[in-house]
Image 1 (cartoon, helix red, strand yellow):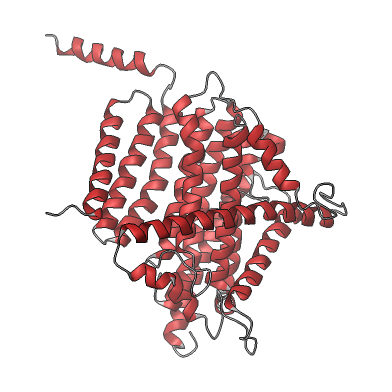
Image 2 (image 1 turned 45 degrees about the horizontal axis):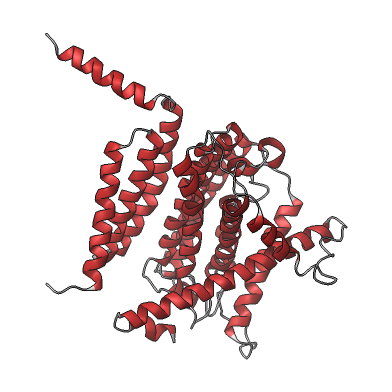
Amino acid sequence: MIQDLLISEPSLLNATIFLLLAVLFLFVVLGFVTYAILSERKVMGLMQMRIGPNQLGGRWGLLQTVADVLKLLLKEDTIPKLADRPLFIIAPILAFAPSFMVLAVLPLTDKLQFADIGVGLLYYVAISGITTVGIVTAGWSSNNKYALIGGMRAAAQMISYEIPLVMSLVGVVLLTGSLNLNEIVAAQENLWFIVLQPVAFLIFIIASVAELNRVPFDLPEAESELVAGYFVEYSGFRWAMFMLSEYVYMFAMASLTTVLFLGGWNSLPFLGFIPAAVWFALKFSAVVFLLIWIRITLPRLRSDQLMEFGWKVLLPIALANIMVTAILKELFPNIF
Amino acid sequence: MTFSGEILAFIILALAAILGGVLLLNLTKVVHMVVALVLSFLSIAGIFILLSAEFVAVVQVLIYSGAITIIMLFGIMLTKHNDSEASTKKTVGNTGCCCLP
């Protein structure tokens, strides 16, 4: 259905349909964010032998996040007197808009995708880089030293870890011969790339946790050092936009991991009768669980350890992976 | 030349790019200028997409979003951001004096 829309003649009707679909998708993503936060709190609770939210919405606390969001929307929207007002208002938008823009290229199933552009993979990496500008802007315009330190750390971390992230993907691109996400999924019909590119998968997971600003790489918002990092001065709806962009990125990054390394919507052998959407959802949930698991298991790194790890460990391994992949592809063209 | 969606998109993007450039020249605070630069670069990436040069557009965003963040950090760290107005006036005054024989 969407494929027909994508190749049809551009018109006002076409634009309206896409707008409505995008709004629908936004609500689906908001629903995911609501229950991702709940499941994160639940899983973290169970791993720490606590119970987690269990008061609101039945035994599993199903309405807890909804209540939290309502509280946030009702809170007073404060702007500090000495803050740089225009930038303080622009910053949450600059941070959130790219997080929703990257969702356009992600192929969720063979029929559900919003844009099928040739350089989909690069588009994702490029657009997600704009968020850094929003975060640094937020840190500077708050006129608060903790916010500024958080913004600086975010810039350093996200630029350093973008490089191993992209370099680890070069192996996948070499094997596929394309940057188009649909073709990358099609190339994994028989064998997933996690089998052919295990090193790239490890580097990608580590670098993506750093890009998502999650523990163990949550230096920009380290609670015990910086209060809340770059969004200390934000409250109410603007604060919610920063949190929302973080969780939308989690959705996007988990989808991207599924598409690149876990075969997208492809099924395991002999299990093809299960629909593609279910396969995608299962793999996606597994990646989200992995992200939560990493968060609850590991302690936070120090700032210099973070930089050293990125530049001296991840980047050389990623470069070596590219070399080895290229050589293997030349030697055994049948397998790779 | 007929009026189409492409022309409309081009006009919007071109105006945004020029607006970004003009703001970059006229704003007084360094960080504001960098944000104007972001607007200008992103609009140019949009114009590349209109020309069906997706790769160039994406690489433009990829390279410049990192570069702009670094420029912004330099702007924050290497300038005194509290005396933007005063310092501009002083520079103008200084050059004026230098021009006198």
